[in-house]
Image (cartoon, rainbow, N blue to C red; front, side):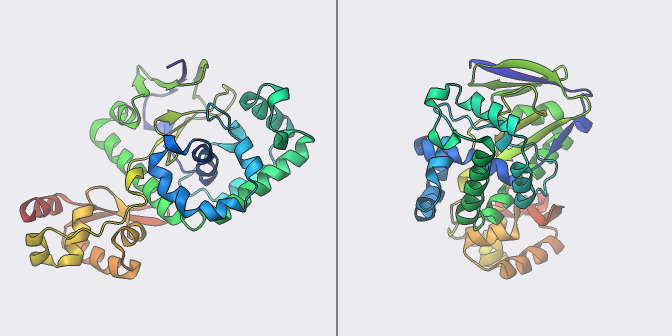
Length: 325
């Protein structure tokens, strides 16, 4: 590790920490997979699925928004304020980015003007309009069809982190985010691969934690002027593009039926009905019927998170799967 960022929590409790999602962050960070797909093997199925769509986009501009270190300009990874953040709102905020911020953040990523990609040169207002247009088209072609599935994984991660805090405390939650993150004496330290080092307080702003599908460890804004934010790899990213068509345990299927046994078997981590339908290759309405029946029987717990209801095996469900395996 060659760099670090430290955030001093103004109050070492949950009140200083919030979780949020950012579609724009996911969009910007995903550009790393264009430059070095081999470093993101979990996303190769998505890259293959979107290959034809990406060929019609403004690839010159989109590739210019990263560098060889896989940095992206900070204004493309805004601090989200809610798990319900909408892409359209973030796109409008991007279009209104002050031009001096655009200039400075691009210079952080491409410091040598002579080597700066041609797409990022010229009048800053025109550059910003082209960036906004390129990202809007990228979202429509490559993200919008898949976003419900992506969002379900991200929301499930947040629910899991909340349960970790309730069970084991804030320090344990931070320790589980990434080997690069730890909380010691009220200071959250995030180790970075970039040559930076600063400490700043979260007083008046708090610290936002945002799960992402497009980082292998953890990352944060490279400028001390940016609001406190840590992006960390979401749980379940490895199963995002997989379909789970394996048969349910035979004994369990004989007891509660094949469809419900398959659902119960995969619900060892929180998931929404939309995500489960995709994974199991069935309709969402069919999944919902089975989920409600198993929840009413005490085999599942359910918690609303944003616009989704996330389901998880209860203690009774865990025991049933164990005995029926």
